[in-house]
Image (tube, rainbow over all chains, first blue to last red; front, side):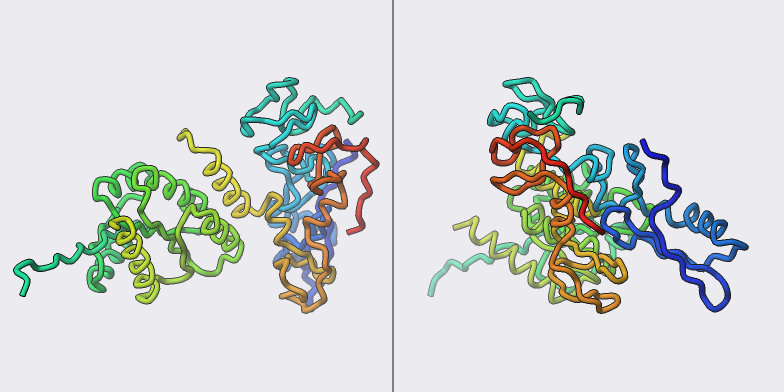
Length: 130
Length: 149
Length: 102
């Protein structure tokens, strides 16, 4: 995994009183997920840390694989990864992604024909599409 | 002149289950004053309690209130839809409507989807109005007539 | 846990995902303002916050552009999928994902 980012992408706006307002954005979609209240600190780094710890981080999901901070919309709750790392899989598939067999029970966990796991990659993720 | 008087069908039984017992009592009293139905106050919003009481009373209509307050669990759209599904297992013809506070646009998509997929029969945003209740009672009465024919 | 029929389970799941702001349906209903980053309803043409023109692309379009998609039905598929789980079409070999600029 790459070195973890400390926060999501952000912009900082200083107000007339010298306080800083942080706007945090989803690392994939750029959606504005959090606008903090004005933060007072000696440096931008210190203010950023306060803003992130107190408000920002609660609005994001951290992908454990790539380290991106993403919005709920861009997070695959089933896989526990961001949508870049784990595209959304239909929870009730009609066909096995591995062998193409039609699934009679679309809520099955494993394919009755080839035994592949039907969700979250289906295999242990090591096999590439051939 | 006929000696037999046509009997009017009894008023629909409207079960109400709001987020808090006192608001349920208040809603039931309000419905009673409005007329047009026989209100049943369901004071517990636990799923099993709601299902049991609706089935025991043979409710024709259930009004379920959501509560989107932060920190409050199991009173959101999904949770209320779970209750709706369970009630319908016992009472397939019961009309179910959600009463939701306004100001939560993110919940609107879920409400629309729930109504589209027929998990619920409808919803309202904001306070329950006389007009809204009359529409719902009308739908319920119509449904009861269809069942009888 | 109550044994719901499949249709009911699917319906409940769709509502839950929408309510918690995740899943494909949420992505289809959302557009991001390129100016202020605010999430807008997909049927809007202008940002409700800053008034800037919204892109045609929804979040779902963005998501699809970052993944391999089934040539048959268009749904995004995992890198390891050989067949589309929606329509059963045989998938071509995975091409390198192109990360769309945000």
